[in-house]
Structures are given as C-alpha cells and as structure tokens.
Image (tube, rainbow, N blue to C red; front, side):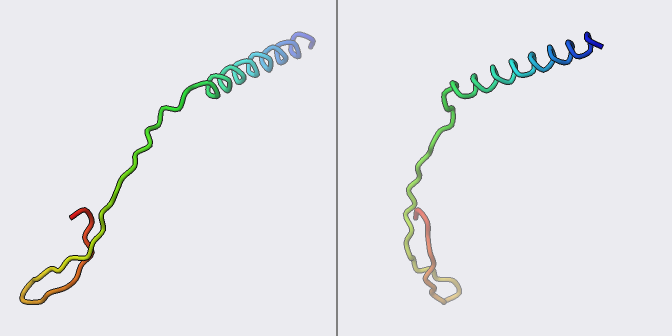
Length: 61
C-alpha cells in the first residue's frame, strides 16, 4: 500500500509542476492582441425617394 500512496504523491507533484510551468509561461508571455481605434463621422442627410424627402442618419458619408 505504500507504493500506491507514493505513486499518488508523485502524480500530484508532477501535475502541480506542470500547472506551475503553464501559469508562469502565461504570465510572462507578451500580449498579442491588437487594439484598433475607429472614427465614425455621423451626420444627418436628406434622402429623396418617390418625391418624398426624409432626413436620415449617415455614417461615414
């Protein structure tokens, strides 16, 4: 029965070492995401269809 608990202890130690390495690698890794900034030009424009003119919202022209 001593070998069974020893195997369990070794597996737990190995698993904790792998988890520690994975977490430390994730903490050191540089961020790879790109932040994009957009500028939207929102205006009111007149649109005529079938002899009726309406004001509509346009984005970027």
